[in-house]
Length: 180
Image (cartoon, rainbow, N blue to C red; front, side):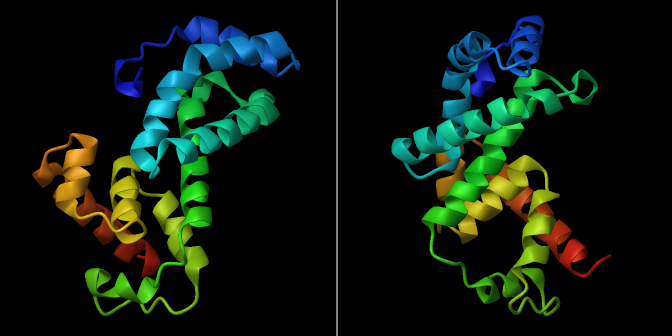
């Protein structure tokens, strides 16, 4: 079941995450059974293979368990919060699995400035500020080496949309890196 087709019962998930915050293992098992397939589907679109996605899913659920007491209903749905955790774990998994990216290769797409040099932290901070779809496309393109056409096909997103997400994302990165 993919995230796009999953219709979570917010009241059920809210009850389960509240019980997880109290270290209720049965609630955690129910939360996992209720949401894991949809979250795994999201991770499989971000990561290179099912094994990587499953490993990342496990790490994400460990983080959900450890941070269940930090969920606040006013900041979004339980499922949205969980997907956000999973996406950040996926970015971490991509970083662990891939060799270091030569950030100088990104520079021509950002213009003459900024000069990236060895300061990766600012780039990563700026990437985290991008909308999820832009960050995903940029990471898959520059880290995994996907072409825009491959990204379009693999995500089921029109090519023009992929190009727009990447163009806007790269412009936002440039602005962020220039501290504008």
